[in-house]
Image (tube, rainbow, N blue to C red; front, side):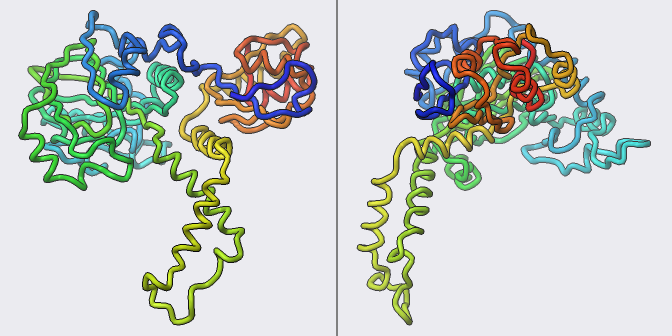
Length: 420
């Protein structure tokens, strides 16, 4: 990424400084990607042979390998004590999703909420053979939230988490494929998985399996690529597009699915074309009307002119412009590390020159023209010396005396730094 000089103020000159202290640079050892290494072992080998290419089955040496992320008691706590609402829970039976009214009820006196999950209804549905799906666990369950943020930093791609809780001898969903990569972490019980080759390689987000139902059905009748029973502690990676189905064996099963929404070359193309069209909007001739009375026949479309101008616009676009647009989208795709408003207020009130501060994790921060832009917002930092900013953005703690009392207070109140 572009580099800013150590000396002088950050607003002097030079390109943007990118700071994502939780994301390792390509080529660093696996130890700098600990969340990913936990799932795949050798990160380098995974990147070269499996990522986006082929499934990877990794048997676990420890049945409790993922108990710190989720457990059966944690599932009970989530549905019975956390006041979850839709869409954080859904329920499926015989391959179909049940209406929300089947498992929700009013929250009771003083709640004024009509769609809280009903533990009574959920218990009855589960006993009758329905699968419970806990959605968006990366937003409501702290251990999963922390791990997903670490994994997203390791991968460079956004990550979400769902959990599937399946009663005995039950197949939650028919054979299908996902439009995102997945890591399946078996938490409890045993589940038989059947994996088949894609009917549509590397599908985009608007190319769901339901568009190819018949092809999926026929492919699922063929010999599977992988057929295995996942035991607690096992992990399975599936690139988007691979068909899969799973059946619980003998008892209740719980597995955690981490969905990886990959940035694709197609996404780069979308931004490239969008920028080119913005430039064509400034071209008077390109904005011109087609002939009066046009039938929109091929001869009326001026394709030679339009194509020429479009190619010129595409050729004039700088890669940094595309990168900036994608960075803006990436910021919106995930959130920064959790922040306690009361803790931040107390920190701001108690600042002394010796107080140590550090950059809040997972901010995806960029410094441009003396402004720090992050997932939590933007803040001018022209009063902070450049060497201090660099240390901060590299993940090192700095003191209030280093930053200056007023800039330090502003950074704390904006949620950009936390106690170091």
